[in-house]
Figure 1 (spheres, rainbow, N blue to C red):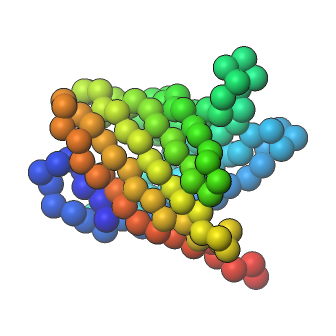
Figure 2: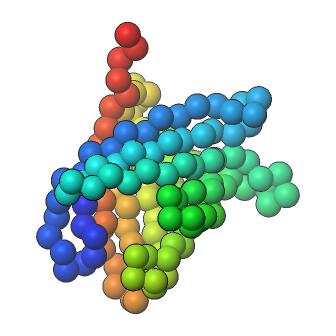
Length: 134
């Protein structure tokens, strides 16, 4: 389920994430591919531990040239990432995504919330599974 703004109707979104450890296992590279309403969206994300800030961070690179820095936290099987973006309309939006990994290590569920101009809504909610090795 996906909603582009608080008043839009929900539509289906299908996503694929591919994760790889990079740079000696200190960082995770995540390539995103999302398909919805006949459109495709890609991005590249790098998650790692910032020694100077003593915190996990994420940098997300968008195909429009935008780079977003986000805060990351882990608590057991829960992964929370939050940041600020500039929307397609040029206005700032704050977002938080919460992912919960399944006990099997091969599934997850989550949701993303967006706040823009004082209005908050769930922009994405869903679940996924890791494909079985061939």
